[in-house]
Image 1 (cartoon, rainbow, N blue to C red):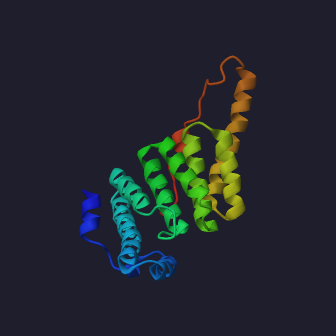
Image 2: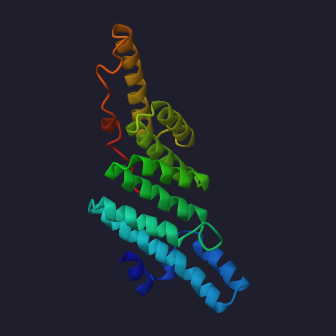
Image 3: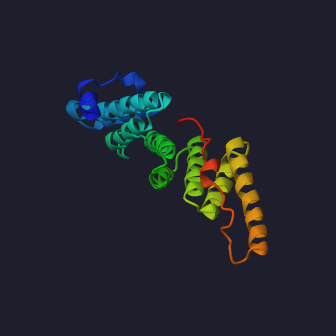
Amino acid sequence: DLLKQLLQSTPADDKLAPGAGQKLQTGSRCGGGKDAANLTAVPSMAEHAREIGNRYMQDRHFAAAAHCYEVACLLCPAGPGCPTEQLAAYHCNCALACLELGRYSDAVTECNAALVLTPAKPITAKTLYRLAVAHVNLKNPWEAIRCLRNCLEFDPVNAYAQKLLEHILEWQVEDRKRQEVFPARPNLAPFVWSDAGKRVQDKA
Protein backbone atom coordinates (compact mmCIF):
# COMPACT_ATOMS: atom_id res chain seq x y z
CA ASP A 1 0.00 0.00 0.00
CA LEU A 2 1.36 3.42 -0.98
CA LEU A 3 0.47 5.11 2.29
CA LYS A 4 2.32 2.44 4.30
CA GLN A 5 5.32 2.81 2.01
CA LEU A 6 5.39 6.56 2.61
CA LEU A 7 5.12 6.15 6.37
CA GLN A 8 8.03 3.71 6.38
CA SER A 9 10.25 5.81 4.11
CA THR A 10 10.00 9.58 4.62
CA PRO A 11 12.15 11.56 2.15
CA ALA A 12 14.65 14.20 3.22
CA ASP A 13 13.43 17.72 3.93
CA ASP A 14 15.41 19.17 1.03
CA LYS A 15 12.76 17.75 -1.32
CA LEU A 16 10.10 20.08 0.01
CA ALA A 17 8.43 22.45 -2.37
CA PRO A 18 9.84 26.02 -2.50
CA GLY A 19 8.70 27.98 0.52
CA ALA A 20 7.67 24.94 2.52
CA GLY A 21 10.73 24.94 4.76
CA GLN A 22 10.24 28.52 5.87
CA LYS A 23 6.68 27.91 6.98
CA LEU A 24 7.65 24.73 8.78
CA GLN A 25 10.40 26.53 10.69
CA THR A 26 7.89 29.11 11.86
CA GLY A 27 5.64 26.30 13.08
CA SER A 28 8.51 24.61 14.93
CA ARG A 29 9.13 27.69 17.00
CA CYS A 30 5.48 27.76 18.06
CA GLY A 31 5.18 24.08 18.97
CA GLY A 32 7.25 21.42 20.60
CA GLY A 33 9.86 19.22 19.03
CA LYS A 34 7.44 16.37 18.35
CA ASP A 35 4.89 18.69 16.72
CA ALA A 36 7.61 20.24 14.58
CA ALA A 37 8.74 16.79 13.42
CA ASN A 38 5.15 15.93 12.48
CA LEU A 39 4.76 19.16 10.52
CA THR A 40 7.96 18.41 8.64
CA ALA A 41 7.06 14.80 7.91
CA VAL A 42 3.62 15.42 6.41
CA PRO A 43 4.65 17.71 3.52
CA SER A 44 7.72 15.52 2.93
CA MET A 45 5.56 12.44 2.52
CA ALA A 46 3.17 14.40 0.30
CA GLU A 47 6.07 15.40 -1.94
CA HIS A 48 7.24 11.78 -1.98
CA ALA A 49 3.76 10.69 -3.12
CA ARG A 50 3.84 13.35 -5.85
CA GLU A 51 7.24 12.15 -7.07
CA ILE A 52 5.96 8.57 -7.27
CA GLY A 53 2.91 9.85 -9.14
CA ASN A 54 5.12 11.69 -11.60
CA ARG A 55 7.02 8.48 -12.33
CA TYR A 56 3.76 6.64 -12.92
CA MET A 57 2.65 9.42 -15.28
CA GLN A 58 5.88 9.09 -17.26
CA ASP A 59 5.25 5.35 -17.54
CA ARG A 60 1.62 6.06 -18.54
CA HIS A 61 0.19 4.26 -15.51
CA PHE A 62 -2.46 6.93 -15.08
CA ALA A 63 -4.66 5.20 -12.50
CA ALA A 64 -1.69 4.66 -10.19
CA ALA A 65 -0.57 8.26 -10.77
CA ALA A 66 -4.01 9.60 -9.90
CA HIS A 67 -3.98 7.56 -6.68
CA CYS A 68 -0.57 8.96 -5.72
CA TYR A 69 -1.70 12.54 -6.28
CA GLU A 70 -4.84 11.87 -4.24
CA VAL A 71 -2.65 10.56 -1.41
CA ALA A 72 -0.49 13.68 -1.69
CA CYS A 73 -3.59 15.85 -1.30
CA LEU A 74 -4.68 13.89 1.76
CA LEU A 75 -1.23 14.16 3.31
CA CYS A 76 -1.04 17.88 2.67
CA PRO A 77 -4.27 19.55 3.85
CA ALA A 78 -4.41 23.32 3.52
CA GLY A 79 -2.87 24.94 6.56
CA PRO A 80 0.41 26.21 8.04
CA GLY A 81 2.09 22.84 7.56
CA CYS A 82 1.51 22.74 3.80
CA PRO A 83 1.69 25.74 1.45
CA THR A 84 -1.45 26.22 -0.64
CA GLU A 85 0.72 26.43 -3.77
CA GLN A 86 1.96 22.91 -3.11
CA LEU A 87 -1.55 21.54 -2.53
CA ALA A 88 -2.86 23.28 -5.66
CA ALA A 89 -0.12 21.60 -7.72
CA TYR A 90 -1.16 18.18 -6.38
CA HIS A 91 -4.79 18.78 -7.38
CA CYS A 92 -3.68 20.05 -10.79
CA ASN A 93 -1.56 16.95 -11.37
CA CYS A 94 -4.43 14.73 -10.28
CA ALA A 95 -6.67 16.49 -12.80
CA LEU A 96 -4.17 15.65 -15.54
CA ALA A 97 -4.20 11.97 -14.60
CA CYS A 98 -8.02 12.01 -14.54
CA LEU A 99 -8.10 13.55 -18.03
CA GLU A 100 -5.86 10.78 -19.35
CA LEU A 101 -8.21 8.22 -17.78
CA GLY A 102 -11.32 9.85 -19.24
CA ARG A 103 -12.58 10.72 -15.75
CA TYR A 104 -13.67 14.18 -16.80
CA SER A 105 -16.03 14.90 -13.90
CA ASP A 106 -13.25 14.03 -11.46
CA ALA A 107 -10.92 16.31 -13.42
CA VAL A 108 -13.40 19.18 -12.97
CA THR A 109 -13.50 18.51 -9.23
CA GLU A 110 -9.69 18.47 -8.95
CA CYS A 111 -9.30 21.64 -11.01
CA ASN A 112 -11.86 23.49 -8.92
CA ALA A 113 -10.11 22.33 -5.75
CA ALA A 114 -6.86 23.81 -7.09
CA LEU A 115 -8.43 27.11 -8.19
CA VAL A 116 -10.06 27.66 -4.78
CA LEU A 117 -6.54 27.89 -3.36
CA THR A 118 -5.75 30.82 -5.73
CA PRO A 119 -2.30 29.56 -6.76
CA ALA A 120 0.27 31.58 -8.71
CA LYS A 121 -0.35 32.48 -12.35
CA PRO A 122 1.45 29.50 -13.97
CA ILE A 123 -0.51 26.89 -12.00
CA THR A 124 -3.76 28.86 -12.37
CA ALA A 125 -3.35 29.04 -16.15
CA LYS A 126 -2.49 25.35 -16.39
CA THR A 127 -5.45 24.41 -14.18
CA LEU A 128 -7.88 26.53 -16.20
CA TYR A 129 -6.70 24.86 -19.40
CA ARG A 130 -7.21 21.39 -17.95
CA LEU A 131 -10.62 22.44 -16.65
CA ALA A 132 -11.51 23.58 -20.16
CA VAL A 133 -10.41 20.23 -21.60
CA ALA A 134 -12.63 18.44 -19.08
CA HIS A 135 -15.63 20.63 -19.96
CA VAL A 136 -15.05 20.07 -23.68
CA ASN A 137 -15.20 16.33 -23.17
CA LEU A 138 -18.31 16.73 -20.99
CA LYS A 139 -19.91 18.67 -23.86
CA ASN A 140 -19.99 21.96 -21.98
CA PRO A 141 -18.59 24.29 -24.67
CA TRP A 142 -19.59 27.54 -23.00
CA GLU A 143 -17.83 26.60 -19.77
CA ALA A 144 -14.80 25.53 -21.78
CA ILE A 145 -14.72 28.87 -23.61
CA ARG A 146 -14.98 30.78 -20.33
CA CYS A 147 -12.11 28.78 -18.82
CA LEU A 148 -9.91 29.23 -21.88
CA ARG A 149 -10.45 32.99 -21.99
CA ASN A 150 -9.58 33.20 -18.29
CA CYS A 151 -6.54 31.03 -18.94
CA LEU A 152 -5.34 33.38 -21.68
CA GLU A 153 -5.68 36.33 -19.32
CA PHE A 154 -3.12 34.67 -17.05
CA ASP A 155 -1.00 33.28 -19.91
CA PRO A 156 -1.64 35.16 -23.21
CA VAL A 157 0.89 33.07 -25.17
CA ASN A 158 -0.49 29.67 -24.13
CA ALA A 159 -0.57 27.91 -27.51
CA TYR A 160 -2.63 24.98 -26.18
CA ALA A 161 -5.38 27.27 -24.90
CA GLN A 162 -5.38 29.36 -28.08
CA LYS A 163 -5.65 26.28 -30.29
CA LEU A 164 -8.45 24.69 -28.27
CA LEU A 165 -10.40 27.96 -28.11
CA GLU A 166 -10.15 28.37 -31.89
CA HIS A 167 -11.25 24.76 -32.34
CA ILE A 168 -14.37 25.22 -30.18
CA LEU A 169 -15.33 28.52 -31.80
CA GLU A 170 -14.94 27.03 -35.28
CA TRP A 171 -17.10 24.09 -34.27
CA GLN A 172 -19.81 26.44 -32.97
CA VAL A 173 -19.90 28.28 -36.32
CA GLU A 174 -20.18 24.99 -38.20
CA ASP A 175 -22.86 23.75 -35.79
CA ARG A 176 -24.98 26.89 -36.34
CA LYS A 177 -24.72 26.38 -40.10
CA ARG A 178 -25.84 22.77 -39.77
CA GLN A 179 -28.81 23.81 -37.68
CA GLU A 180 -29.86 26.34 -40.32
CA VAL A 181 -29.87 23.62 -42.97
CA PHE A 182 -31.30 20.88 -40.75
CA PRO A 183 -33.24 22.70 -38.01
CA ALA A 184 -35.03 19.52 -36.90
CA ARG A 185 -31.79 17.52 -36.71
CA PRO A 186 -29.19 19.64 -34.87
CA ASN A 187 -27.11 16.60 -34.00
CA LEU A 188 -26.81 15.31 -37.56
CA ALA A 189 -23.00 15.56 -37.56
CA PRO A 190 -21.94 15.75 -33.91
CA PHE A 191 -18.51 17.00 -33.00
CA VAL A 192 -16.14 14.36 -31.65
CA TRP A 193 -15.43 16.03 -28.32
CA SER A 194 -12.62 13.76 -27.28
CA ASP A 195 -10.47 14.95 -30.21
CA ALA A 196 -10.08 18.45 -28.81
CA GLY A 197 -8.94 17.28 -25.43
CA LYS A 198 -6.29 14.75 -26.32
CA ARG A 199 -3.31 17.11 -26.06
CA VAL A 200 -2.77 18.27 -22.52
CA GLN A 201 0.06 20.17 -20.93
CA ASP A 202 2.80 18.74 -18.77
CA LYS A 203 2.55 18.13 -15.05
CA ALA A 204 2.46 21.11 -12.70
